[in-house]
Amino acid sequence: MQGLLDSEQVIMHPMIVAELGLGSLRQRAKTLAELDGLLEVKTAQLSEVRRMIEVQRLYGKGIGLIDAHLVASCLITPGTLLWTHDTALKGVAKAMGIDAGLP
Image (tube, rainbow, N blue to C red; front, top):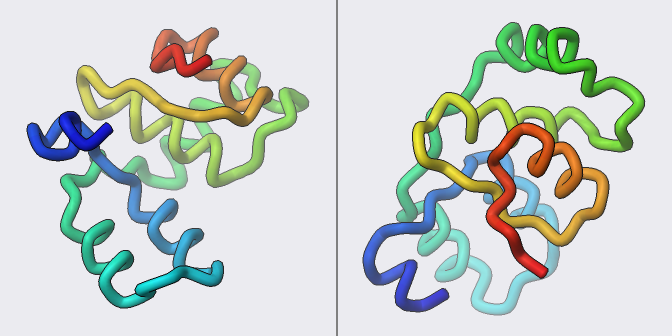
């Protein structure tokens, strides 16, 4: 992971940083600043996310709005793969061709 970070091959979605900011973090200010410093995916518009949900029939798959937003943002950011251990999100990412293949 450090090698990927050093070579700027890890990009972040701003909603993930915000979600992490809701938790208890050691060295909170430093951690959030480092996350804010990462490159970001193109952020999908809500209308794009909603359209993707309908076209790809993602309803009833066990993912939430932020998950769907991550998927849409990966799809509009060429070459982006999604890293997740969440089973439902991993299944959707795999079906959409953006699963990074974490075990």
